[in-house]
Structures are given as C-alpha cells and as structure tokens.
Image (cartoon, rainbow, N blue to C red):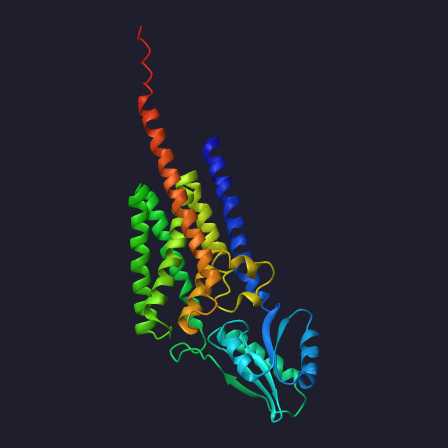
Length: 330
C-alpha cells in the first residue's frame, strides 16, 4: 500500500469516530440535560397571597424567572405576547395555572408538575390552556419534526448552487426561488393538510421560506468565499449544531447553557421560534428571530456576491498566464 493510501486510510479511521463523538455530543447531551433554566413564568394575584409561592419558585436554584402581574388578565396577555410560558394565578377559590401548550407542550407539562408540587397538600389546582396546541398536533411532535426538512432544504439549495457553479445574481435568484417554493410547499403540507399550524397561511410560508433562504445563502456564501470547505462548515453549523441546539422540540430555556442561547442565533433555532410565533401567537415575539434570519440571509448573499466578484477578477489573470513551453527534445 502506498504512503498516500495509508494516510487516507488513517484519516478516515480518525475522522469517523470524531464525527460520531461530535454528533452524539450535539444531539444527545442537550436532550439528556433537559431542565428549566431561567424559564420565564408569571405569578398573579395579591402580593400577600403570591409572596410564599414566589419564594418557593425562587428556591428552585435558577430554574424560573418569575414575572409579577397584578391580575389574571395581565398574566394572560403576557402569555399571548410570549413574554412568559405560563402563569400561576392565586384566587380566593384556589390557585389556577395558565399554560400555553402551543408555546411548548413540554414546558406546559413541566409547569403543571412543578406548580402542583408547590401548592399546599390537598389543594385542587385548576389548569387552563390559554393558547392550546392545534388539534392536529396536540403534543407538538409534528412541529418539532418539521424543522429538519427545512434545514435539509436550505442546505441542499446552497450546495446545489455551489456545485452547479452559479454565481452572482443568478445564484441569488436561484436561492430566492427555491426558498419561496419551499415555503409555499411547507405551508401547504403543514397547515392545509396536516393541521400542524393555526396562524396566517402566508406568514407561515414566509417564515418557512426565509429560514430556507438563510441556511442556503449562508452555505453558498461560505463556499463562494473559501471554496468547498465552506460547504462543510455551513453543514456543521446548520445541521450538526443548529438542529439540536434549536430547542424546537422542547424550548431554548430547557437546554443547557450556553446551547439554548447559541441555538437562537443560528437560522434553525431562529426559524423555529419565528414560526411558532406566527403559527400560534399572531406574530408576537417574532421580531428578534426574524432579525437573526435576515442577518444570516444578508451576510450569506453578500458573501456570495463578493466571492463571485473575486473569482471573476481572478479568471482573466489565470487565462492571461501563458502555458510553459515544452522542453526541447534531443
């Protein structure tokens, strides 16, 4: 076996275990460490009645970020605006827990267990789902599973544009067209057929398309700047890190630090948060996530144009370099 073949074999033997370890760390570690971390919840009612409950929640070692509200109406509004995931309302008839399973069925269940453990023994806890998950996806499993195809579609569009050698405006137009079609198809399937979404159809299609565009333009832009390694770096960011760090299947506040926060700065996490806002909360809380998607899209398209211009400038210089003359024979 040649030295080159030996080096390639050793590289594969080293690379595969490293990839497996990285994938297990990225996917399994956050899932194995699911727990509330500064999870925003509300407490409403008279201060004298809510003080003991607030104290008990605060003793959970940073598990909850407690927001104080004067009335049940204010707490409901905060839930609908995606300021908090739920709220405990203390009334003369007993405590009432307000949840929003549309924000996260996992969090809704966790709050039910946590608050039940905090109320005095024998007290009946009333639970009201302020923003319920749709009947077509009561556990949110389809919503969580729907993110991965978006990531694949975005990555595929960026890779195909690179492999086909498309540049400049043609590459950008191809990415835009592919993203728009992906958004329309995704909304048609998830909203119109499966009933997973319950918001404005075109807003959902727009967020789906923008997520695909942000991922595709980022990968194509990286490839235009640094060549084929850009595809690998883009895939690492979007698929291997962006998907498990997104928190779509649970909530960003349930993931270990700093994974939950980092995931919201990547297109998969931002896309999932924006989609949940437009699908169930009339767009409330979507602003920061849309800014992240817009920033990735702008950066990716800028890199695409800069890389294409640089390659075009280098092409004439390469063509003008004369080929070396063959050495004389004899």
